[in-house]
Length: 412
Image 1: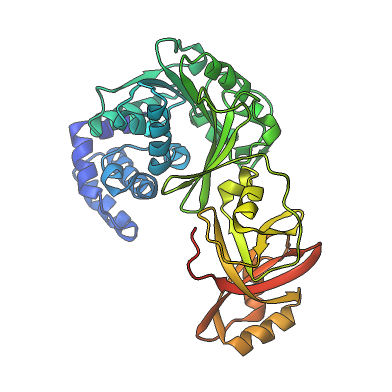
Image 2: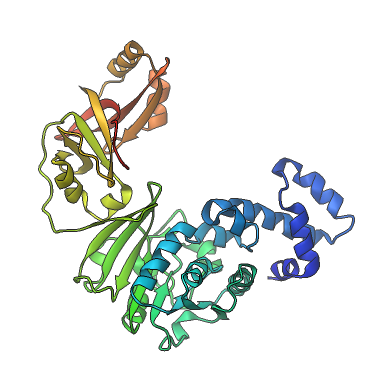
């Protein structure tokens, strides 16, 4: 906390400007030089903040990242700016003019909401995150629209706001302790620092759902993309969002006017949204000329059947989300590949085929296979001027290799 406050003072801000573009390889030399004229703790804090800003460019863009203030957890857990902007626009389109942003962290979502013209109460109990959120609102000229408050979110009265947004901490151990959190905690499975039981979120999903249902107009709860569908409340709309092909989050929406239990997958940039229509599982069929790889958000939302219907295709295997078809019917919700070869899993035969085709650039994709892509590349040692994609998968339960390349004119 003290180091962040020191960086907000005039000397700290000037030092931040001086170390902004420091090459990590020269950091020691820069630190040695600056410690002759500045306190060592301040120099370390400035260099650390410069590193965080460099990491934050991927999420916030260079222009904002160079002006904002970050914590390590804030950089890791903040919503990507493009995703936050999309969500803020959904709120605005629902007629929302004010939002209580609970578990606001360093303020990334509050910033997006304010830029959409929405008034925000941003609340977090972590004093360092609160200080960063307040500094970020001021640094980006949004202080008049964002009120930042240090408090336990479970005790905040949100009645005066049109909508509620909750982004609970979903990590265990030290990360959860330092991250955006409230005092309500539960037990749950933790793997690699991530919490998979929604009731082990901080605050738990059940509390967030109750808070959402009290909102006068709308509410959104950010949850892990891997949330079980059976954990989604019946009166919520579930949305999975990907950006540039990477699944970023799932959001439970309340008050959107959609039918209870509605499901959608949204792809950014765009946005392009695929809505669930209640189709049965696609039929399993023999491989056709084309393979369609659905976007991760589509898969998480269980909307592979909708993609299969769009392309007139079926599944290679009942348990694997690869769609196959005989015609090239581009869809924004899947990437299409033209398949040139099919064979049972056999490394020697694949190596011989690649050598015959002069394939030196090999993309390996897998679903339903235990083989690691790097292990396969090491064994086949591709060489040559051509490129190919190999899919390690199952066809009607049998381990299979499908070889092909991106289909011309495919979208996604």
